[in-house]
Amino acid sequence: VLYDETGDIRSLSDGDVVLFTVKKPYGTTVLQKELTESDQTDAGTLDCLLEPSDTIELPTGEYKYDCLFITSDGQADTFISSMLYITEAFGLYTDVADVGGDGG
Image 1 (cartoon, rainbow, N blue to C red):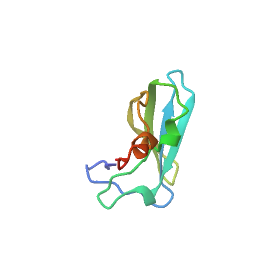
Image 2 (cartoon, rainbow, N blue to C red):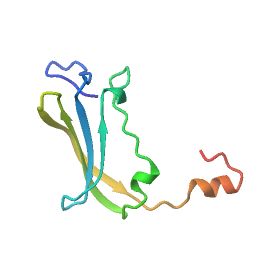
Image 3 (cartoon, rainbow, N blue to C red):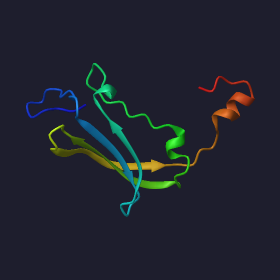
């Protein structure tokens, strides 16, 4: 959720963008997703879905990520910055499907 200076939820406007960027520890970008007003829910949250295909080629380890809010007039502010941990997958959806599971 984005908040304005008064603490109210800030809705994205036409032309506003949030960039979700994942980088290696030394700064190389490995993943970036662009979120716009169409990704914001009625409750004000932004949904940034990472698909298995987004991370399948990434080596396990620590990555840095941030979310940069860019307004339609070019002002920018990083509002989240943290670590992302990519871990090894021990099972795959197809493993469950092959033995009759529901894949859930």
